[in-house]
Length: 252
Ligand SMILES: *[C@@H]1O[C@H](CO)[C@@H](O)[C@H](O)[C@H]1NC(C)=O
Ligand SMILES: *[C@@H]1O[C@H](CO)[C@@H](O)[C@H](O)[C@H]1NC(C)=O
Ligand SMILES: *[C@@H]1O[C@H](CO)[C@@H](O)[C@H](O)[C@H]1NC(C)=O
Ligand SMILES: *[C@@H]1O[C@H](CO)[C@@H](O)[C@H](O)[C@H]1NC(C)=O
Image 1 (cartoon, helix red, strand yellow):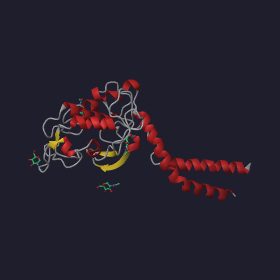
Image 2 (image 1 turned 180 degrees about the vertical axis):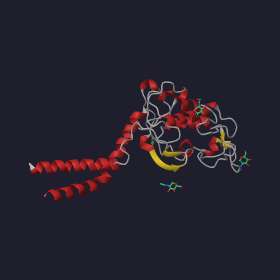
Image 3 (image 1 turned 120 degrees about the vertical axis):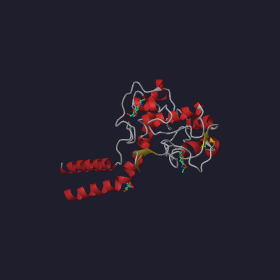
């Protein structure tokens, strides 16, 4: 009987230690702590146009979804037309990228803390489906820009981003020779183009038809499980074993 209780206690300690050591216990169905995100995902029936696929469960408000479709919007005062007018066929990808960033509750596995004035968390290396990156790049090839990292180095003196004096306007494919150069570099590695295809359940889709649900839910579940089995169990088992042995010694 006494042995039975001992082993039950051991098991309890083991489980508790493993649980407590997980870095961020919830990776699913969360919103990052950034400039415009809601605290928690929830339904938003009226999300605007390209953001509407997220209306059943979104981290963005209706206002954010409206602003995501505007030039130099109140969101970030970002000027897509910094080297003349960006083609509409190209701009729609930037709108979709903004919708995914602001609205998706499925980016948890790639959320990282950052020390930035305008946000506490960012996304890093989100595995973007290769076709989503390729069409983005193809549709933007003939538009113009002056930089390959759009997070840094702008001249903001007029209240929106302008090309700095030393940056020359060239076609997109000058600054981004390949699709990966565009998707990985433009937002400082927020994305890392995946080798997986749309529909594989292993990469995040920027575009999807909500009629068949949000395909990114399954993707987040897959990578969250991977993250837990990696960081959760393997890194804390020495701690768990230590605690268990200590308890055994105390009770003997
Ligand atoms: C969204 O909210 C901001 C801040 O309150 C406001 O400046 C902006 O005009 C709003 N946009 C829309 C489309 O309502
Ligand atoms: C964040 O930046 C502030 C100011 O630059 C600094 O004092 C602080 O130590 C930084 N924190 C981390 C976690 O890097
Ligand atoms: C920034 O832009 C302003 C206004 O467009 C201009 O007067 C200034 O020279 C620019 N500064 C740099 C460093 O490019
Ligand atoms: C990506 O997939 C293609 C085709 O399935 C394969 O030929 C290629 O080696 C893969 N690349 C990487 C980096 O895994």
